[in-house]
Figure 1 (tube, rainbow, N blue to C red):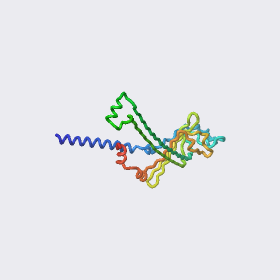
Figure 2 (cartoon, one colour; figure 1 turned 120 degrees about the vertical axis):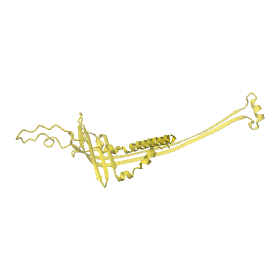
Figure 3 (tube, rainbow, N blue to C red; figure 1 turned 90 degrees about the vertical axis):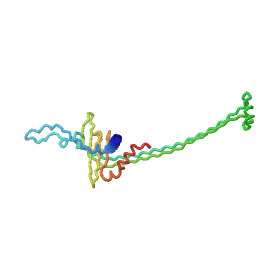
Figure 4 (cartoon, rainbow, N blue to C red; figure 1 turned 45 degrees about the horizontal axis):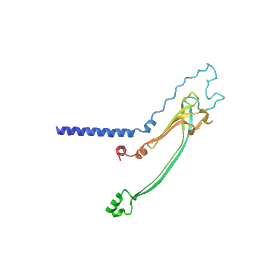
Length: 239
């Protein structure tokens, strides 16, 4: 009976340990790349324009045959080229230097005759009873952080929605596979049609609510990550 209980306890402990490890592995596997790799949205279906009359040379209104409209994106499913040029440089430096010195001295010349009794029993208290103390402390600390990020590329995005105020909601993605390495670039945000240049391009600085993801997956990216046991120990290690 004792062997059976011991065996069941060992199996239970193994099951719990395996569950914990599986939980941490699941947490480590779910990353931004899973969200980036999702398939792009399908083009929005637009109502077909009215067909021209039989025998008419007019093909219907579109951006190609309007005299006062250029080829800039302005409708759903139109494309616009995004010039991504993002550079961030941040630094922070802090220094602290504090100190304190304290000294206190007190003496008793007469205390209802008790001072004389104390002086008789202890010669070190003569000629006056005195008390004193001193304390000092100091603190010095220094910190410095620096981070620089730079991303330069171009990406063609698609207009997915035209807002009520005329702004355009865009979304674009690109996947590049080379030598077993997959690179994903995903961009989304809101732009103004007035900020689009005559060449149908717009700088990334003019995108509101911009979200830019640049991630990779493959042998090189896998070698740059620590092993699963190291990641689990980093989570559970209390020190």
